[in-house]
Length: 329
Image 1 (cartoon, rainbow, N blue to C red):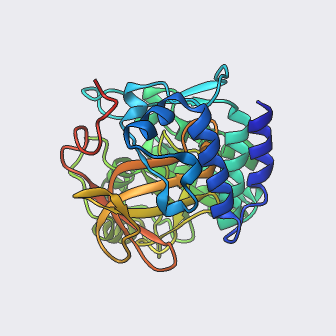
Image 2: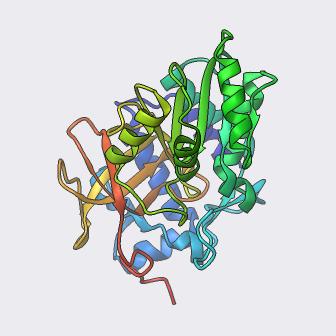
């Protein structure tokens, strides 16, 4: 736990110049103290002591969060977050050493992008996450709601009509309004009510959850902007297996947060990473995952530009069986 506290303080100093140094420090710590990662590196014949740059760090397929207990060192989890995937898929589990750290870290990243949380009122529409339970997204948004200290901030399970009514009333006040919703639910509100949410911040996240056909982000945002009468749709990129988030303000490119970096791998050769302006698999370095695993090969397809901004273009086909399966028996 002392090591975790040390990394927690170290993350407060992270910037563009120190990111690689801190990432390498976490890599060597996890290579030694994470049994799964240690075995994985052994299978790949990687000597952690010989790794000197980020580009040499191996990424672990995200599916191991479904099949293994991914922990670095020994700790009793304060919380276990579970994925909100469809019922015919095995859940991912993320063992959280400190929910307080996660909440404060997520809030810091949000405020870096949008300013003090106290200026907002948050209307959250996350039905599939609330129904599933143990969601990292619900935990984060609930904490944000509490920090707004506004009596109207809260969750709306399936009560679309009340949300639309409350948003319209709140527009008369001084607080900025965030409607934070899972994608399919926002589309349903847009189609059923076509509310005038001009001046509101609309955050979409989570996709269709099997409720509707997936759409490319540009098409989705065009529909939402027209039907909700807003100039922009914001997106949040996060997942059960990560403790850091990234936000998209222009509908296309996500800006990496201080503790999160995306690199693109070649789909046919997962060890080839660092593609620029080319489509490929998304790999994530999340420094906040120091208690679990910071170097993750996701099942998303995307691309990066020269500045590290990234797009999410969709999901891989047959993602449950792709990638390196050396430890899956």
